[in-house]
Length: 119
View 1 (cartoon, one colour):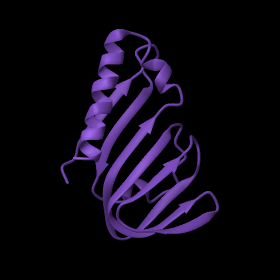
View 2 (spheres, helix red, strand yellow):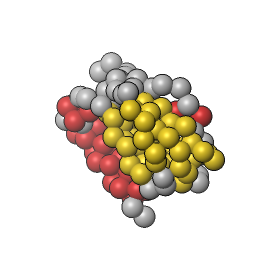
View 3 (cartoon, rainbow, N blue to C red):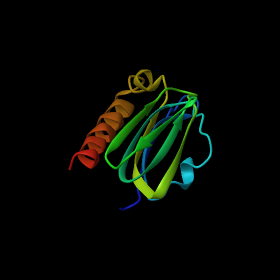
């Protein structure tokens, strides 16, 4: 899988508003995560265990996970994993209305995401 990252930053405070990136191993998720963003994680290849809150689930390839801000989660892949992550700040949709330029950038970013998720 080609590695890539698409990022949109809030121009008012320079905080992350939106980020889409690919991953080719589970190293980023082998510790408990408590991110301040909504997260969608698509496991495109791999299988293993996901620990979410106080529960444990099996996962296989083509599984989509959805997490709210600060929800604890981690993955323990059996033989590696790859996929895509979409993180966005709770105020993301307010950010995109700040300026027309930012709105156009956000629309282009969303179109790119759809293209990469559903080629």
